[in-house]
Image (cartoon, rainbow, N blue to C red; front, side, top):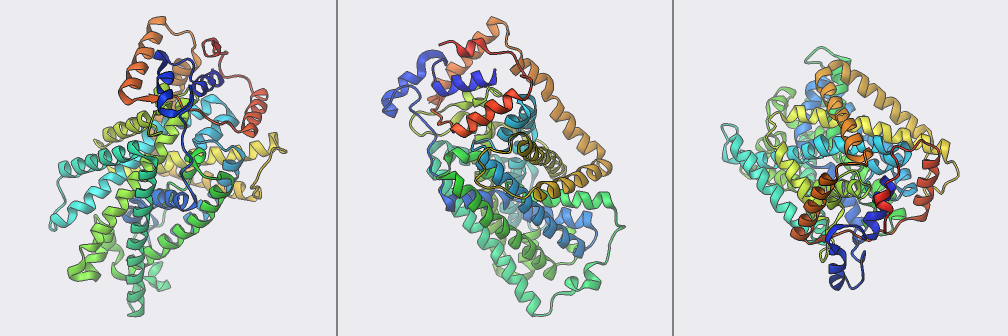
Length: 528
């Protein structure tokens, strides 16, 4: 079924209403002439990685990391180790990204290696929890940093936070729908802005150290516990840190829009991950030169409190800088997560209209609108830190599954071309750390983690009813076709032409031969 769905979407022959042929005057070619454009170069690729990682995490999660670590010294060790593990995982993803050069990232890798059900579960939890939650948290953080200076003696009103977050999401969705180039330029500008903001924090921290303000960095004070050490809480500290590093794999979602992906994907990873790790560690060092652990934990906006202590009348610079940083984070997350949903629809795992792009702008407007609406719905959830735990746990679960797939692929297909081939020690080290994190997170927060797993497993019946079951009632199919046609006409979208990589096709066929088919052949998809 899935292969048939992919064939149907790429050729553009079987969608209702003949809208593809109507688009040919706009594209200058016949059906299938519209395609995603390769407009992401090395600088923009680095901007996507850095911009997606540096969203709200470094400005919100320092509180969660310190609270669970129990001491300043251990919190800094968590930040360093999380950065190293992120680098190891990114190298593994670099190999997968050039071996299976498809948009969709870990969803595409899991689907090709483990089959349709596993890939669908990755997509399902991404649709329901991970990416809407991530975007909602970043948008709420943007609102908090914009409004906090207006309410110096109290917290901003909840309704105001949510309204401003919604406006931010709607504005950036419009930008992304209008032009890929606009979206990447916005990402480049705001990534530079957030690096300047963090650079300002680091410089002020260096000045503090030069003045002798490093009490909490001295070993005897840094490792002074303000709560009883607990291995489960330390695992949760790593989860909080992982949220701050979340987004390191987002460039893999837009592989098909990269200029020369075989070179620029690994290069962007090699540049971006060390840069972010350096910035994160020294930003946290700077925080503790101006604030005690108790002050940091009591702050609702860590960077704002830091600026108030050191900048005096210029303290307004910090909330504005952080707001601009998180604004760029929302843009990057919208851009990349919409491509994940686009890739899932192209494989037949989401409604087919999400696999369409605008006839003139060549942007996946339905996928972007779907991403925006799902994020707006997530804004009704109140506990930001519980959301961070959900995102961290489920993300780590699928990061591990994906990297385990790298080992499986090495075993089953040792001879396929791999422009990058890392040592097997890398995935093994990552999986050991991954297992530690999952086990102790489940032990410490069984309700939070169990709820995340339960939500993921609700995708099993959805898969069998929506993807595996081919003989749906005719009236249902007609209704879906009508909705698709109406959506096409409203959004002016068609199925894009996709240039399949021959090596990827060979890999898919070989892997399919080695596992039992997950669904009967889709006869309708093969009809001319």
